[in-house]
Length: 548
Image 1 (cartoon, rainbow, N blue to C red):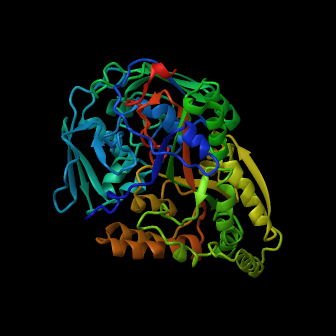
Image 2: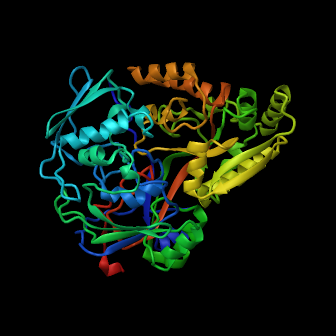
């Protein structure tokens, strides 16, 4: 099967922020960065800021950047997106050797050779048996063991390690979604021995990888420290002596940390005003990289709570939201921008504006949409409703968009009580207790791979918390995953999108994000990706001491 994602490239811009950028700050006239080959310097510690803290340290169960940014440098992947060109969907070996293999058996068998001589940070040798154990945990987790991306691999029949240097993936059917799923940056390779001796929960609190940095210390709420792995399996890397991930939930604190050079970068991204303020204050001491972002903020109605078990009520919530007007307003103050459906906007499989306008909540006449919403609420017998809204205590974009949503729903007579919680408590409510009417949620993926990315909208998905079953949607997804041509994929995707967002309104899409990364000019080697999960192992990052 042809992989229709491989040729897709998200738009990205990088610019030096000298007078050209300052002159264009109002309209954001970023200059194209002139790429000059520079010899990497070794040494130094990279300080960066992180806006939140992950519920656990286990990459197989978590979904948040707050885990990836401090902990991805401790781990390796079987394959990864090319760190020298992360805007592409070009994959390169990390723990494999010989390049990315071509499938055999009609596209259903992938055989990788695994590097020899790699060791875990505790000295254990790494072999193909560890790779198999890790992917078994991700793809076929035992009952009760969370795996946030197991639905990405619904095409996989089995994983085999016939010897210590060979790993084989056997697919049920050929799928262009398999290789991008394999490159997902949460697919950290764990030690088989650790899993067998300590259990599947051990990695929630413990770190043992083969990555470019070794875990040193985690002070909850303060920082995570890493030190250079002298035995790293990519020769000549990492360049840094270490890093410190500084946890700072308040955006103003993160901005001031960069402005005062207590930190060099925040990998997740800042809103436009913060970019402009840093550029104005620091001039050529800062650079800005920007990119479209494979991340969309959602709201998730809890189908197990009345009246949100009624699709009329869920459709009313969507019809109340002025996405087109919100894009114009929110893009000036938040890291959201683009109106879209279930697929990353701009991708060939994404809905056009004309197609979107046929869905509930995407019409250009917001007053007509809200009139329809009020009629649906009246028909459902919902005349006095207060929504218990679970939101995450992170400014961008959660609290900003949450405040906007509350106003949108008020336009159809709904009251909202917003519960803003720190990330661990937020996730506990979303995933475990289910004590919410509607919760903020998100579908933030790494490799732009719509066929895998849209699994978020399946009731069976491990990262879907709306508590519903929809066999029609499941059947459509099975068709989508097996569809051999682009035209068939696109036709099925529109049907899938209509059920998910319109007819059943299982989840609500707000706006897709836009990534803006100002960073100190002395930070070299890091290149922006269309995701805040990609390119975060930091093995290629170095510091230009002449600019410090």
